[in-house]
Length: 121
Image (cartoon, rainbow, N blue to C red; front, side, top):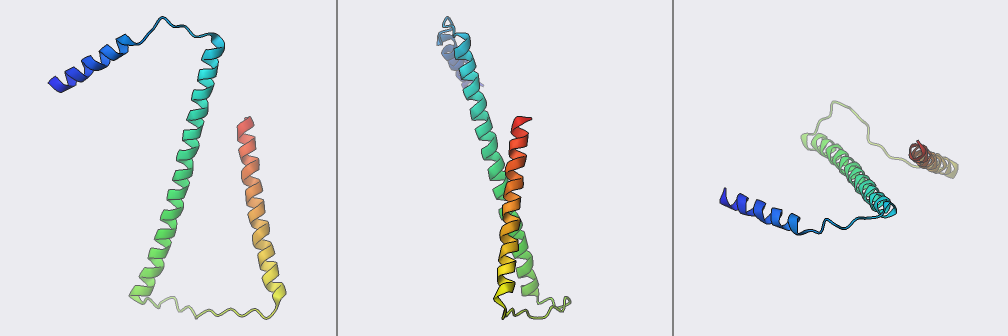
């Protein structure tokens, strides 16, 4: 209890020693609030990115763990044949790459358009 009281007293002394007579102009207050909002948005975006990264990594880990469990337990009730892919026709590969790139570009476009829409709303 004594330590908490001394910390409270120290904090109280520090707060009382701050100058309170200084007044900021309206434009300075607005600039400070703008900087605070920018920092808040930056922190929120960082948390969101870290959340997506953690979710993605956890999903991959669970998927790999499931695959390894099937392999370790030698579960064969799926009766899946071994897959060997030999493309003799190069146009099939090019078409698959084209579809993959097109899907990626459309997903990115969708992401940026949604981001722009929510910024203006």
